[in-house]
Length: 87
Image (cartoon, rainbow, N blue to C red; front, top):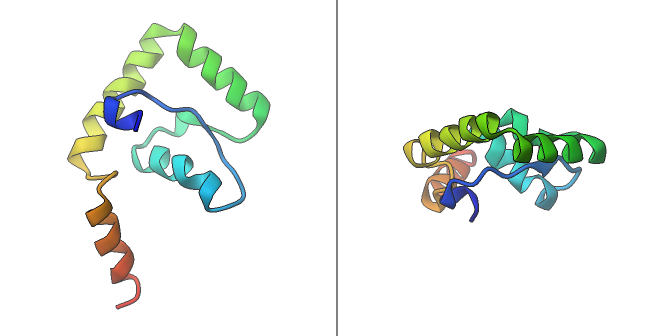
């Protein structure tokens, strides 16, 4: 929901499907900078994003540019893509 509002989301990559949802969204939006591999990495990326307006603006622009253009959050797009794997 935050991504729909063009607000960057820092996420901690997990080991299970549910914990990788935000990771997958960030990777599809080409927001590798917003993916953390450890708790300390998550903390440092979050602090850096909040204290660096230039970085925040760059990430925000990437969200704006990609989220609507590529249908990354479109459930219909996901469904069709997912179903095509089994056909």
